[in-house]
Every structure is written in structure tokens, then in C-alpha cells.
Image (cartoon, rainbow, N blue to C red; front, side):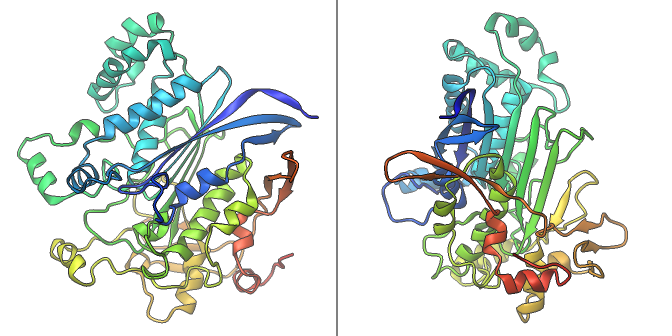
Length: 437
């Protein structure tokens, strides 16, 4: 029997706006819910058993009351509650040496990024001192954009008394963070802000750089999202540290495709198919640091046969798209955000462009595909950063947990979920100089 480790892993999962997999209805689970369900209760790390504690948080606006759904889902209201709940869970469960993981989609992406930054910048209050959280949270939001919180008057006066622990964050993995709040940038809210009414401003990101205490940051981004109210909130890496890794990868599809937001994946287009592969990418990057119930993750990931070549939902079509047509469009621009965004473009983009007639995403218009060597593909454009293709060919085996009939757990190693979902003929097309096992 392996020795039990003297630390555990705390995994916080926050869903997108209006999304909940814990309400008992028949809605399709998002990628966040799927991953939360696929994480095993124990990991085998360096020959020791590590306990893994998962917290799943439904998206804001997922209440059954229509008016409350509109207010919470369309505005920033409720974010204080969400961030506080996440922080409170960590405070109640954290012990020195534990590892912290944060996963979220859309509004939940904003929530976990905010909570992870809070933990990274401030530290963790003990459960008995959580009565001071509201005061600390208020002081944290009130600081100037570039001022470290530990230099603030509040921190200097209270950190020693409250015995705040400064701790690292192992992973933050998100699907398509949008706007300054993780919610659409509605024109009415923007107009009120322009005339001096600070609606939602108290919640906005102070800084989009990846804090030094966060060791790994991963973001899946939607290449086809053109709604002007859905601009991507990119990370920036300002540490230049070899110990920190940032990866932001572009996929075909719109916001809902990437995060797996669909009541019915078949009727709503190929949201499930594309989402299966963004889930696989996140599993191969962020979750290979965990132990997943691999078979469960595969079973929930949908049919991978089209490998991202199914229908992409048109957000501008029909009556429901009228509002977005009036507001106009804004093309996302891979490679043009910042020098330190650490972007990549998933090979699914190259494959879909070659296989789907008429699919010409505006986001890659003007980008030249340099694919002379299939294992070193890049996308380039004069005057901006080259964007490398995400290397699917790199082996990313990870630990897998399987529960036996007698209730015991068996730990093995399997190929990455991303590679298993890629059909062999597609892999051969992508990398003709390589062979798949």
C-alpha cells in the first residue's frame, strides 16, 4: 500500500453564465462540469497517494428566477458572492503545502482568475479570520492598477495580525474569458461608464498579467467569435521565469463551442464536437498535472469523428442574432495582442480550413501558414508576432485512476486525451513525417 502524502490538492471549478450541472435537470454539462466529474479522489504522485478535493460552482445567473438570471448573467452583479464562496472554500480546506488548481469557463473563467489572483497577491486567511475577508476584499479592489497589495496600508497594518499565508497557485485553466468581467460588454453599461457612472467597475481586472505566484496558466480561445460584446481577455506574461508557463491556444468555433455551452449539442450545431477537443487540450495541459478517471472523461467528450469540422453556430443568424447584428462585429486577432501572450493555434484550425469548404475565419485572414516542416508549423503576418501551431505530436502521457469492483483504486499511465480524440488518419495528415502508435 503506497504511503499517503502529507499534502492534498484543492481543485476549484466555476461554470459559465446561466450554466449549472448541479440542479438536477437534463442540461448538457459544460467542459468545466465534465472535468470536475472526471477528477479522481486520489492521485499517485512520486509513489505517494495524494487526496484531491473538488469544488464545483454553478455559473452566475443559473437560478431558476428569470429576472434574477437576466440581472446576474448580463451584469457584474453577484461576482462578490462568487469570489467570496471560492475563497471561503479554500480557507476552510487549505493546509500548508496543499496545491491549488482553478478551472473556469466564461464568467466562471473571470471568477477563478480573480480568486487565483487574490490568493496569489494576498495569500490565504485562516478560517477563523474569514470575518475580515470583506474588509480585505474591499481594500484589494481599491488599490491602484499597478500597486502591489502587500505595499498597501491595509496589508501592512493587518497581515501579521491575521497571519495571512502567501502561497503559490499550481494551475489556472480557463475557456474563453471575455470582457473585463467575464461577461459581455453591453453597450448600455459601457455608455454609463463613459459618462462617469462606475457600473461594474469595482469588479474589473486590475491587471491581466499572470501573477508570479501562479505556476501554470492555460486558456482556450474561440477563433470565430465576432460579437463586439465578447472581446477576449488575454493573459500577459511579465515574469520571464522558466518556472512559470503560460499557454493560450486558439480553436475553431465561437464562445459556446469552446466552453461546451449547449442545451442540445446536436440541435445547436457542433458545439459538443469542438468542445470535446478543447476539453482534451485542457486535460492534456492542465489536468495531466492531476489524476483523472480517464474513461469517464472520454465518455463525456462527445463524438470526435469530425475533429472540429462540424457546424459552427452563427450568433448573428435569425431573430436572436438581430441584436448582435445591430451592434456590429469585431474580429479577434491572434498574434496582435501583446508580445508576451504566449499564443498558439491548434492544428484543428489547419485541418478544418483544408477540409471544410467555405470556412475562412476572419481571424486568420492575412496570416500566412508556414508549413514546410509539418512538425514546426507557424502562422505569420508582417508587423506582428508569429503564432506557432500547438504541437499535437508531443507525447503528453498522464496518470489515470480506475476504480475496481472491490472499491480499490488502480493507478496507471495512459496517452493524453487530446491525442486519443484525434483520429489516426487526421494525425497522419497533420504530421506525415511521423507515425501514430
